[in-house]
Image 1: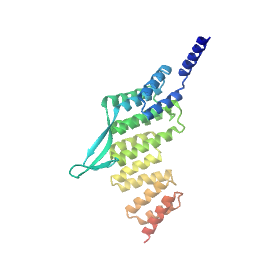
Image 2: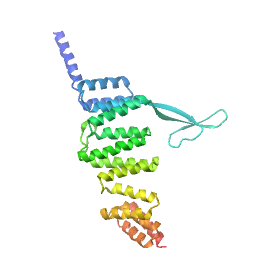
Image 3: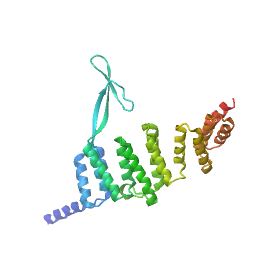
Image 4: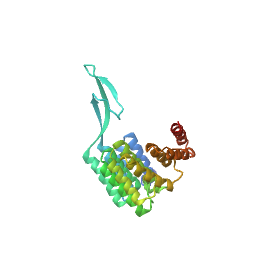
Length: 298
């Protein structure tokens, strides 16, 4: 009788181990990464592959595993103060200040395995948006900006084929597929244009988006910014005026038009659009308009 009971208990434990849902495995794996528990992490991945051998999520799981193995924290000591890093200050034997900070270095082999795994996942499951943005994120973090833009442009092209019906972690549907994609793409545009300063790559991204979404106000605004950045005030103004016809209440566009007329010394039109800006619902732009009007009317 005792033996029978023990067998029943063992069977129960076995059933429990083999009935883990993908969500339970995902949560356990996330915890193992957070706790830096490599032993538990390897066990969960082995269980996942045994229970769900054809699961799309395994591409994400292994990509993250390889990336975690690729990342190495390196301590840097320098006489020059770092611009974008938190640092500690020490002094050498001569009393000179030494700046100490940590940065991340990557093992090239493991990094490539992570990238290749995501690329394979995208090829097999092309509508997993998290795979695409995950790949773009790793490329961004490792300064591979051209490859990153290629991934983003390919994502835009895929959006035309799937009608923005994207999937995310655990194959969940993305509620607003187009909105989620566009917001992320705009974030990368801002990084390329403002932080990295690679305006050619930024323009490549904008042109690709407008090829598929020619009436997107945000990216049309980005296109006009390129004209302004080149010193082509007339060209930028023409672009913004066209956008204004499409979106007459967009405060950003109205402000840009007013500002460009002001730069062109066209006081009458500058006042016209600042007064229009003053009537919008955006409190920040209303304050800006009032200040600009007061300056122009002096």
